Length: 305
Image (cartoon, rainbow, N blue to C red; front, side):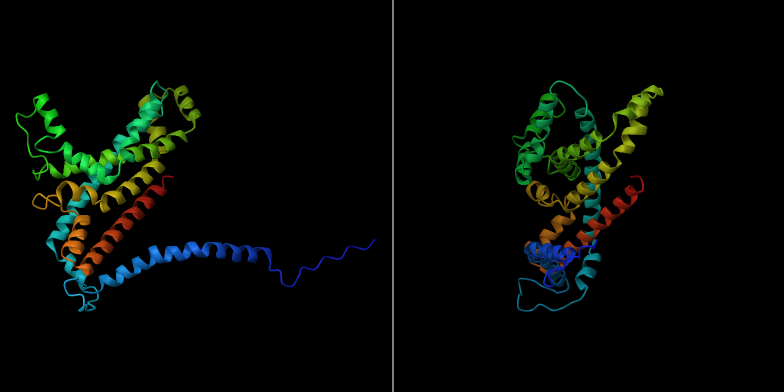
């Protein structure tokens, strides 16, 4: 019996894999073009601007200064003070978010009456836009009719209304409180999803071995939460380092530069001094610092995953 001859493929037909690749590239081309226009080109152009002494007060004279803008920034005392304030704000915010979100996630992971209502209430701060959140906390902190002053007076902690945001020692903690209130819901959701992925039989086996609640938390819950902790730390650190809205709405960098952070300095250099070259250089420094921090967090936590 003769074997059937293999059918010849038309010479115009491309191999399946190559055809799929070409089709995929064709469909991805519009998206790639949009990304190049709205993302890649502005990044490259802003770096090019950071190498020029571009000021809108003299737009016709834009000398190419290489890295002089970066040198000028690193020699500025206010820049290093802003770095310290940004670092302290980031550390305070991320630590508070991690602790509160972990407690909230563990609470919502339990079965109790009203859990769905509590979950819905938890999402309210996350749903509020940053500008509305800043205005709300500005009213709460107001020295004339603020709710916080009224509450403290009724509880007997103060005998008269005080200027909350006018105290250099209270400004950063108050802004941190407003930021934490806004960011805790998302962090709670991320950690709650991580908690749901823990196998129940691990806790059952630990109970059989005689482990109490604290030991189960230390040896099962915390190690299992490492991926969620890493994601929350990376996201919230990036948000804190680049955060601008609350500083603009609540204090505008004051009082006496007490809340003058890196994001505010970028705004001042770019839109108040109209020094686009220095502002772009500051933005690039902040971006590099953010991605460097994210890299080290990923590297340090990936060994435990």
